[in-house]
Each structure stands twice: as structure tokens, then as C-alpha cells.
Length: 464
Image 1 (tube, rainbow, N blue to C red):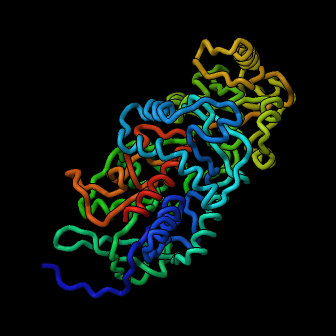
Image 2 (cartoon, one colour; image 1 turned 180 degrees about the horizontal axis):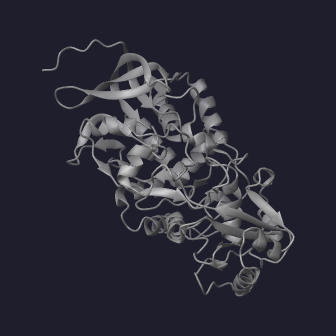
């Protein structure tokens, strides 16, 4: 028998993390008449969600219909399982895909999120099914979530570090220990025991910035590899669940963003150019040969692994017609020197110490593929609006992968209930978002993380 616990506080539902998944879960739990408390270890809400580009993927939407894009849940499922190399958990993936449209519409109808009047395609997707909020930032969605949180009078406590989970004699989750007034630098705070009458929802994100934990899973990812994540994207909440017997899946499956640049820290401004313009309309070359080496619209794992094999930064090239047609504002990336402009391909090649003749030949060959609509070298999908790379100025950016997303995490079922190492439900413990594993398999497709966060955040909030 465990001795009687002296609780400091109690609440129906405790939600750990204030990103997309956590705030979504909080809203749904509150609408289900639960007393909800959100805790966040940092001094403000949003986590990594608030620094993302905010893109969300969904099939069979009104925007796709408007732009005459043919899509289906099955096609999105097939794309995600192909990128995931077939190791995705079918039950979880099916749950995400077949609830994606409703989740996207929920952000519009319930939250009032405004989206740009366009649909984009990213690497690994067969068709355009990605929607970007006004401002091209996850902050647009987070702020609308916070508005709803305030309307529902759901408290968010900041500087609260989640330390451990408390279970009863039957292994059921009944509460936790947190550190309030948490000081990140000294790793100290006021120990506080919180009793949870209905359950805990873990929505703490991934461990992309946790060098010690991630390098155990993949030894390549030591401190020499940067991350797009904020420094607080660490594994302590995940480990607290493992400590009470929670199961895990795919912890070594860690995604690197191939659209990142070594010429800026963190996520930066270059990825907007690389992911939204360069990969769709341009080419990536190995500066040592001046030649292409990968399908620029392949999934993230394909692109990042190809760069790691080359073992040095690569150069992405697009032209003025691509930038103009895309409609994206890349002025910040240019002003900060991450994306550079050149009057000619020769000037560009010389700046990056490449052979101008080789680079020219590469571009001319690619232009032939654009004109005939088929890439004979790497089978890149030539988008219908693509034009030959020939209009000055020419734009270039150095590319080198950074740790971006952790596909692995806690084992859950389709009800967002955390499972133990024997695949049995741990009562009163739920999880949603990047802290969960199994949805994306070996590689996540762009814009599918927010979809997953909202789908499973809603499920967790309702089921708790």
C-alpha cells in the first residue's frame, strides 16, 4: 500500500504543454465540462508550434475543390505510409488522415483561423493539400487557440516543470509532481503535487533539442548537428511516462529538415525559400560536382539522407520567375544573407566555388525536363506551373540538414490513451502531438504534424 499522498492542488484534467496539441486538448476537454489546467515550462505559450510556418495538410477540402485539385483520404494515407517506409502504425495513421479535413475545418469554424487562398504541395505529397495561415506562421493558429482558451476561462500556468507521474496501487495515473516557479538555468523550482481526477494529457512536444537523448537514439545527431527547435524541446516528460512503464515506438526515427541553412541559427528564414520555392521550381546541386543528386520534391528523409551522404552543405538554385510565381515574400532571408541573388549563373557558380560549365549544363538539362514535364534523372514531379530556370536574378541558398522533428514517442491507441510496454492501457494517461510515436513512421511529410496535433488533441480532450 502506498502511503497517503498530501496533495497541494487538484484539477479534473492536467494538460502538459501549450502548443497545438495541448491547447486543442484543453479546448475540447473544457467543452466536455471538465475543469482544465494547462501547464507550460516556459514563460509564454506556444512551444515549437508558435515558430512553425503553420502549414496544415488535409484531403478533399473546399479549397482543393476550388483549385480543381483531386485528392482523397486514401491518397494521403498512401503518401504518408510511403514516406514512413511502411512502419507507420496503420490504426494511428488512419485516424489522422480520416479526421484531417474535420480538424482543418475546426480551426476555421471554431477558432476562426484565417488561411491564404492557395493550396501548396511539399515533398512526398502526390498533390497539393497543404494550407498556410495568414502570416505564414503557427503563431496565427496559436493566438486563435489562446483566444478560445481565454473565452473558456482555462488557466495556463507558466514556468511549471513537469517532473514525475504519480500512480496508485493499480497503476492508474492519479496525479503528478511539478516544479513551480521553474528556473531553467538552475533547474530548480517549488515541488508541488497535483491530484488529477480525470487524467493527464501529455502534449509536451518532441526531443529535437535534447542532444543527450537524441544521440542515444541516433549517434549521428550529436552537438555538431543544429536543430530548428527551440532549446526547451527536451525529453523529460516522455521519460517521466517511460518511468511508470509506458511503451515507446520509433525513438530512433528522427527527422532532419533538408531545407535548413547552416548560415543561420535555428529554424530561420531560409526554409520559406527552400521549401516553398526552391524545392518546387529549382534544383539542388552538389558544389563539388555542380550536378543534381536528389529529387528536390522527395520526402524529407530522402533529401536529408542524400545530403548527409555527400557530407557537406549543398547549394539550391531558383530564378526570378519561380520567386514571382510563388507569391512568397523572401525579403528577410535575402536581407540576412541566407538567400543570395546573382545576375548570372556564372556569378552564382563562382561565388560558391563551383564549375560554371557544370552548373550551366545541370540547369539546361533540368530545363529540358521542365519543358517536357518529366524528370528523367530523379523522377521529380514537375508541377504544372513550373518554368525553365533562365530568368535573372538567380537565387541561391546553402543547404544543410538540421534536426527538425522526432517521429518516435509514446505508444498510444486511436483513443489517445497511452499504452504500457505490454500494449495495455495506462488508465487516465493520454498523449497527443509530437510526444506520440507511430503516426509518421520513418519520415513525416510536411504540414502533417499540425494535422496530427489537432486530430489527436481533440481526441484526447474528448476522451479524458
